Image 1 (cartoon, rainbow, N blue to C red):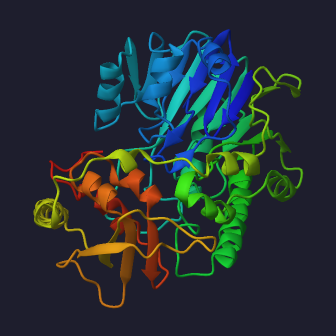
Image 2: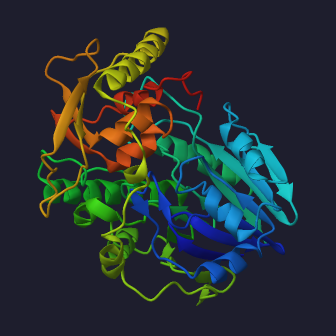
Length: 436
């Protein structure tokens, strides 16, 4: 078995004479708020991708499902492997994109494909912190790949708890035997703490990294892989939010390797390196563009965002009030229907063109405020700073709230994460509530 890691969760797994391409992403995601790193020459990248025999898409988030890259690279004639999600959004988007074949797999069921044996691990909880959440999506997946007598577990972004990892390990033991390699995302592929303005971000960054390392150590104890590879959660923040890069809470490889304490061999292969598991040798079939992460941040600091060109001239103050009222009515109905309690008073603070200064503080071009007036929680407040244009795109369904909030700044009092509130905003749209 060979594993080539390009960036984030983008990798190629080869075994049994078959090559499985996983979560290809290159360019921007989340309304331009994330940019992939490392970067590659497009022609070389496309040629590499076309050697795949099949493509696995873990879930619909834009840093995993990249329609522009799938179209440009010429891989739409390959079979696409996804979970049999309750919502058929991912399947339908792949078919509309031109995918010739979409294979839907049930969770934790063995599927043999051209020399590979595959099992999808479904989402079992909504967040990795074990926090109570009243809105639970069938959204994320991981994948187990078995070939050449070796087994790989690729977590991707699936927010598994320690009990969930025990379930995965039991399934692997029963179905495949030994777990040889685990690809795990360690650190926060989220906006915390860099997007939160009313806290000590360096201190919170250190705390998040420390918690991530503690959980990483516990996961290794549960899974007991022979080899560990870090994968996922790597990107840069381009454009007006570039000053926030220094607070992204991502443990470095040295810290991860030290936590392993020889429980597994660690290989950092991001950047087009290939690990041959049969003899643990490295090669580099695809080289990235020759610039460091700091150089990439500088190069993309002047990037604009897609919504900068969004024409909102027909949405005056009255029209925006009406748009919000319609979206909020649908939101309230959905929350009432599900018996969902919103535990924070949520206020949207609109800016003409939100940016951050060198200290990561928001610009003062505030032009309006909207509050979820019927969902107030005494002593618990969440203020969300974002562009007026993005607010309109979210309310009208032109952009997904999960994605556009990558270009928001937050003030949270007290500093308490409430995942129900975060997930509920996906229903604040002037359209039928999403089903997944």
